[in-house]
Image (cartoon, rainbow over all chains, first blue to last red; front, top):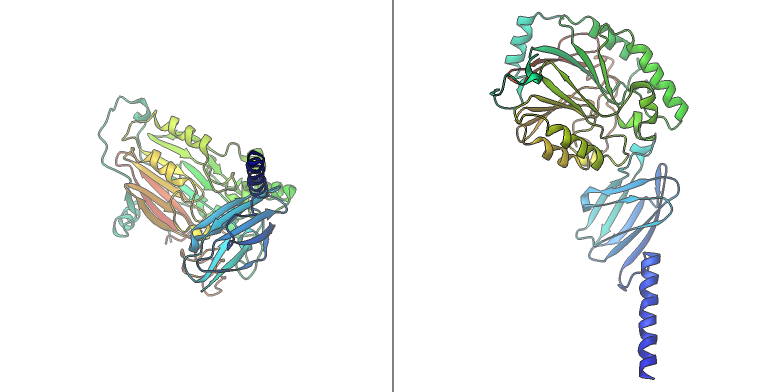
Length: 122
Length: 300
């Protein structure tokens, strides 16, 4: 019986792990804020992202067309946004403020305007 | 205003526009690559953005490049060659329009008297198709050539949309440099700055530091680049980086405004901030005297 329980626990743990790995965003940490963001030429949605200082965040980027980028120099975070998959980016905001971000993979005629802001509140 | 050689050198000296890229030469004169050492001029033209329209920024968008061509043709000291450091055309999302613009640019520069022309792309030319259209018109996006004792390296940091030189090209650069003496005069042309000038505005190359690291052992290296539409001078160690003005619209100084955007046309000072440069390569000293010109040929 004990052996069966152990096996069930292991299987359960593996299932959770697989869910995390495949989904890429069902995170173990209970207080983690998960924010889906879509990117397409030449905009992010949403383009204003609200987070709280000290609370871990996962930005889940999905591109609807081509390779884009996400670069927020003020928070020193960036990632490529490849089409066809979820591109997670984890960070913990360490200070309050408004931080611009932009696409840093050249994506076309509106590339320069592909921007947004992250607002970190206390 | 035209200047003679004496004025040119005077200007270069007083204005501090003679730049050393390294120590004085001391080396093997038997080196065949140096056998043809001789001072010469080359012109750098950049960021013509052919196809751009926007009267508040440049009401003469169809005529500015033509004026620059005429101005180059009227230079008293004609260059041995002319280097175009990218963004020959303005971005279009349409592949056929891109080719039309490249063809339009090519048709205009046919009027240049000097026929030894060198090209490289900017991200507007090559960032959406990895340089495919550019290559159809102007050939490879990275290459080397030697001229009168100077080794020139053209690096492509735009065809990959991630703003990188890339591992393959870095390996190619490394292999090329290994064939050079450490005190060989080397000039590198890029579109984007290799160093982190202002990453928030995309004024950097993501793996540019690796390129600079490869160049560091060489004592006489100067980099000429475009992309930022203004004259700018910077050193990473002993390596000098010299940005050129553009030929369509000027851009603000790095980080001087919250959002990067073209500086509006000034009717009282038309073409202000636009221009090109004539560079005198003083080969033995590996120094490059830069003389800036307006699109109308005025020495600035």
